[in-house]
Each structure stands twice: as structure tokens, then as C-alpha cells.
Image 1 (tube, rainbow, N blue to C red):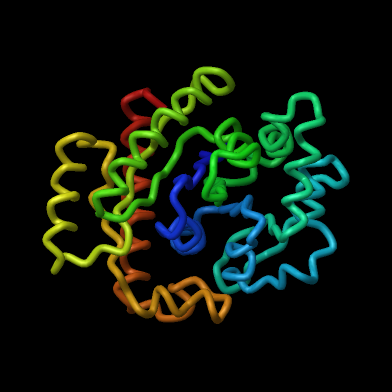
Image 2: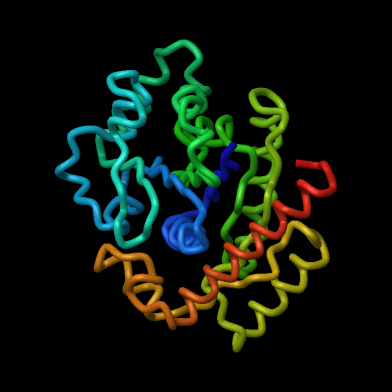
Length: 262
């Protein structure tokens, strides 16, 4: 049965989509079966996976509105080795439609039920807002991975985000937990980065991933070629960091299973 992780942060530009694409490719590289769901109307996870979002016959839009099932809309990202449920601007219309539907918060969870056993991991790229789309992701997820930059305002936003996750979990998904906090775009030469990183270690301890994602040119270039960093430049610091993250996530899961808490 797949572990479902929502990659979420209400602040934009923190590396959510970069994390989704590269974590999916890294988990696939370690022979896990992975499904990446693009739940952002911008469709950046779709184009970053080498799929033309303007040429889609089916997408997550039709899955959420019940016009097709999930398998019909999926595509394979050959360079990344994972399955993709793509998105484009039509998803904005789906969000409006969801407001009129019964069980609107659990549409994605219901759509995933027939395929969860086919995957080891399902990653959901959330939009940078607490919308009905994000609520669907949180209701469908087992845990939330929060990418964040090591800067002052990120700490302020983190408090609000965690409170939102707790509220949604309490109402719709009591098993939901914060899986981990991921430091992204890290430049260790900046003193503020080090200060914020130390605060995160003090306050979040085991929730904070040991792996940090560096600010890396090759990692930033890869999406423009429709490639995960592993396919664009496997030796780059960014690609290697996401491989390390995949290993850390797998180890955490094994540890939780052995202790009977997962």
C-alpha cells in the first residue's frame, strides 16, 4: 500500500515542485513504484516531467470531476521513471466545480483508492494556497512534507501552515501527520541560513530531515528541459541531495514499520 505524501507550503517559490519531481525520480531510481500528482493549475510538475500540458486529452481536472478515472489520465515520465497525473489551467475550473459537489474534500482520496496498492509512494504537488485543491491533497495524504527556505519569514509562515494542517486533519483526516520539514535552496555561506536552520533543529528535532537541498544551478536548469535533475546531470549536487532525501525517507519508513507506528 502506497505512502501518500502531500508536498505543501502556502508560500510560493520554496521548491515544492522541484521537490516533487526530483524526489519522484530519486525514489524511482531506487526501484520504488511512484505516482506523482500535479495538483497545481500552473502545471509546472507536468512540464517539468517532459509532458506538454497544452496537449492533454485527460488530466487531474477530469479525475476530480468524475469525467474519467485516474488510470485514463495518467502518463509515464520516461526520463524520471515514474507515473504522472498531469494538470493544466483547466484545474482552476475543477476547483470551482468541486464546491458544488458532495464529498468535495475527499474526491482525490476516493480516486486514489483503486490504485494505491500499485505504488510504493504517491507524491502530490500542492498549489501555494490553502484552496479546495490543497484540502483534497491533505485529506488524501498520510503525511505532509514541507519544503521551506531558511529565512525569517519562512518561520512565520510555518506556524500558520502547521495550524492549518492540524485543523484540516482534525476535521477530515485524523491520521494526517507532518512527515518532515525539508530545507531547500540552502546556501551555507549566509549566516541567516545557519541561524534559521539551528532554530528548526531546536523546535522540530526529528521532524526535520537531515538532508538539505542546496542552491544549485543544474537543479534550477533541469525543468526547462523537461527533465528531473537525475536525468539532466546525475552528478550535480542537487541531484545527489534528492537521492539522499529518498534514502532518508525510506529509512524513516522502515524504522516506523519496525516500531509499529506506521
